[in-house]
Length: 231
Image (cartoon, rainbow, N blue to C red; front, side):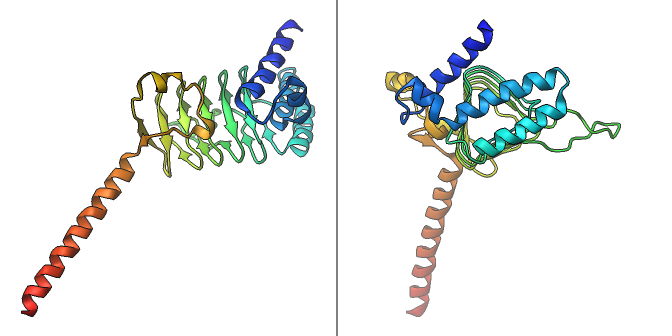
């Protein structure tokens, strides 16, 4: 009972720490659909582990109806979990989530069918998420991949490969972006809403800029040659 109370307290505190629109514990308990979803999931997961699997699935469907958040009762979720806004979130059966993870609306932690060398379907189909991960709205994290600790996944990214710890990924398909070193100011920043990192450098964006500049240069050269021929 004491362990469950501590878990509940950590999830209420997570709402207060990461949702600026919530000003009190009482408000979090009444108004946070993400909090409602994770607490219902704790109960459903307990039922699943006790082999009341059909009952757990039925209650999970009720939780989905009430909150707009679909969490399979078999999913394993650590403490301090927070879903902001929540609507449209899907967390699949073999998902594993570490501590202090934040997710936003329309995120899918989805499964893909993976076969072993002998042709059998592997039981692990969904992602494993590390500690202190932030997953922005609309992101799709698919398959039995591993997302390292302290990773930030930008909104609408599609992640289908492992992500190294302490990195930020964005885009379709998701790719790494470099965070500029802002010294002490950067170190003090402990939370990045929606996985949005200020002053991040996207190598794909830089390459597109280079290609654009090269095209503009070639266009100007062609114009010069055209004028010379016209003379």
